[in-house]
Length: 304
Image (cartoon, rainbow, N blue to C red; front, side):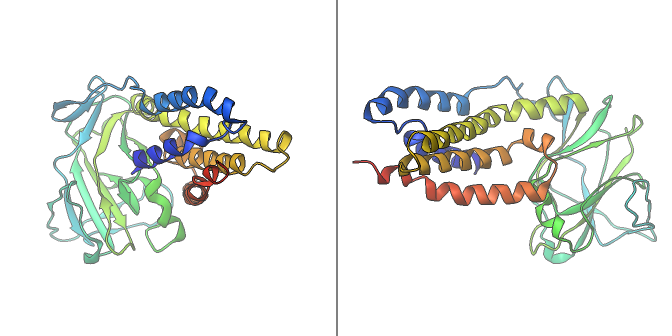
């Protein structure tokens, strides 16, 4: 979905900011700018390939995909404390039956609002370990327990406005040094009519390695987004200083470029490192997409 939208934006840039100074200037600058944008979008950044093993190993064996050994249970366990601080515990009373959970076939939320997942962390021993949950991988709010002690919380485990936007957030959850062979529990709440729980692969890895991978993985689209925004701002400055707000092609091209750049940045993990505000990020993404599409055909309206 993300890359398809990028393609749409790249096509729209043909008549984007800085290329409406005249027919001669357009012919002179259009091809180099297009080649630069395409290179930024398609440049093969040096992210190591995955290697099959016990799970999927990446970056010299320091990131493990936790794909096997998951179990689930609906509404089975009650926390003994619902406080906001980590360290809250839960108790299992009576016999609890757990069933296998397949990450590739997530459960439907029509069976309940509270879902428990568990997995024994015996895939690998890693120093400075943390769980990494990519964005669009968890729905909606949840708590994380190691054995019976809570170590992380995201959102509210009850109907709340903030929960609607949590899916765009990635999570990096540090683990204690003695996590190996201990049991990891997730307690999910979702008032979505269909989706609940983990819906794609999560990872175990060293904190510095995970952060490095996040930067390398999205560095290209981050640069592309910044390029589009600064290009749109440059076009806007030309519109004000040189054209006195009378060049509609430059106006629509600048709006399209800034909007496309903002949308791309909201999809970047690098942006989430700097701006940890899911509601703002969600609204900027929606608004930038809405303003980009009307601006895309605008430059052609003034063309002969």
